[in-house]
Length: 449
Image (cartoon, rainbow, N blue to C red; front, side):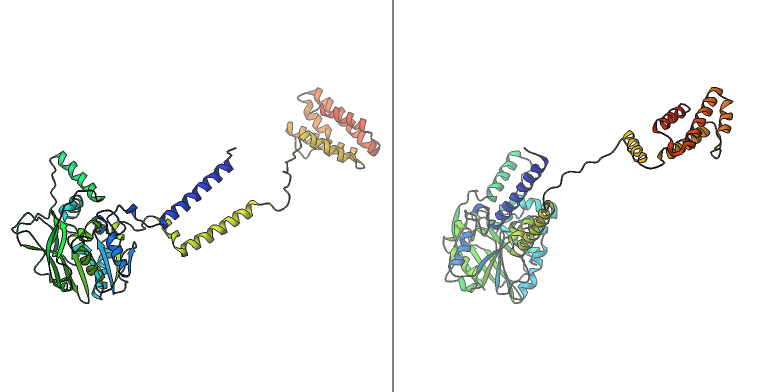
C-alpha cells in the first residue's frame, strides 16, 4: 500500500539513485561521443589525432577542463585550438592572466579560424561588442587580425573581415543557419588542396620537415599583422600565382612565446595525415619535448554550474560520504525504540456525574460525613439565595433572608423557612443522622432553589 511513509521512502530512493547516476556520468570523459571540435573529437574536425600523435612519441600531453592557470610550469605549451567565441567574450580574464606566465617562459599556441567561416558567432560579437573584443585583445595582440584568404585570387584583394550577412533574404538566412549548424558538428563539405610552405625566424627548424601543407581551398585562414607588431617567426603559404600569406606567426614575449595559427584545419583529424601536416603539428606543439596541455575550458567542457562534479574528487567525495553516513546513523537511532513497544495511553476523563458520585462515595466513608455535607450544602444554599435577592453575603440568618423573600413571594419564603428548620433539626442529631434522613433534608431544600 502506498502510504505517506512509503511515498517519502520511494522519493528518497529515486533521489539517491539519480545522485549516484549523475556522479558516475561525470566521472567519465566529457567527450561528446567524439562529435565536438576539441581534443576528444574523433570526427573530421576534431583534433584527437594530434593528441594521440604526441602520446605516441612519448610527449607528456593532457587535457585541462579547469580555467587556465598562470601557475603552470613554464616548460609547458598551452594549446587553445578553436576556443568558443562566447566564452572568450564572457570570461577573458583567464587569458589575460596568462600573459605573465608567458613572459616567464611559458608557450601559448592559439588557433582561430577566419571570421567568414564562423559568420554567426562573428555577427553576434560584432553586434554586442562593437567588433572590438576578441582573443587577440585578451592576449595583447590588438594589431593582429584573422582574415580569410581566397586561393582563386592572384592579387592583393583579401576577403572582407566582416561576415557576409544577408538580412534581406529569408532563404539566405536559412542557408547560413544550416551551414553554421553543419560547421558546429563538422558536417559541412570541405575541399582541400596542398600549398607550398615557407618558414622563417623561430620556425627555421621546420624547414626540412614542412614543405607543403594541406589546407582548405576556400576561406583559408590568414593573419593580418600590423607594422607595429614584431614577429619572431612566420609560416607562409603560396597562392597559385606565387603570392604568399601568413598562416601562422610567433610573437616573442620576454622569455616566452605566443604562436597564432590562422588555419585550425592544419591539425584536424582529416588533414593531419596529409602532406606535411603531421610533422607541422608535432614540431609546433612539442617544441623540443615540452609538456603539452590542451585547454578544454574554452570549449565549454568546464565544471561550472554542476556541483556534482565535486563528488568525482576523492577529498570532496569522502567528506560527503562521511556526512551522509552520520546523518543516516542519527536518523536510524531516532527511528528505533529500545525494548518492546509500549501500549498507547488513553486519556481518561470522567463526566461531572461520575465525579460527584466518586466524591460522594469517598465522603461517606469518613466519620461525621453527613453533618459535614449538610453544613456545606446549607452554607451554599444561603449564599445562592442571598445573591439572588441582593442580600449581603455576610448575612447567615435564615429568618432575615426569609423576610426579604416574603416581600416578593410569601409561599417561597415559607417553604425556605421549613426547609432550613429541617436542616437545623437534622444537624442537631449529629452523627446519629441516618442516610435516609439526610437525603430527605437535601430533597426538601433543593425545592427552594
